[in-house]
Image 1 (cartoon, rainbow, N blue to C red):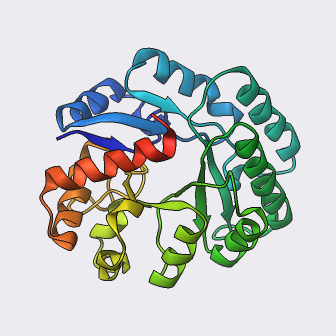
Image 2: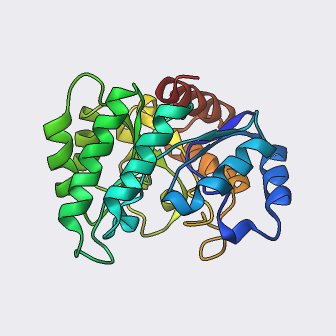
Length: 255
């Protein structure tokens, strides 16, 4: 069984003590490909080091995370744009809008999101969207950018069935991870109504660990628990879930 983690922060400080062991554990569990989202320029070197250590397994994105859109966001966007012009990345992400912690920079988040979508179109890359308490604001930007060249993944999808269908209408796959295993996660109640061609797997490690590890550090190896949950929801063997979702990531990321 070959699995793909479409969203994992393996360069995070949370893995500084045992990163190699964590990656080996994931590989031993069949997770062979890891897509690595960016946060801001302070993590770029760590991302490159991760890619250098595991060149056959790590696939980097570039972007400015919405919670890191601050007063210096224009400088950060220049960093993103500069790197996108210099080397290969597999997506522009994670980008979007997050209003859970702070609404102070909403206008700047909207501008940064829109700008990075246009960078993705320029470089013919998918986008990977971060959305927290901001579905309406996200959809407003996507509506203005919809059409040819707009596609990607709605990372860590936690919305309703209606919102899922709307996201899909903008050529987005849905990133499904640990939340699907939560008793109050809600998305497990309607996922079966969505064709699996719209689903990719993710962990968002070190965040949002699935049951039975909820509340602890998440790892890419725990993707097998998400597979098990989707196997129950869709009534398919784990191997089939792995095959379909890995093919879906190939469609999005172009490899």
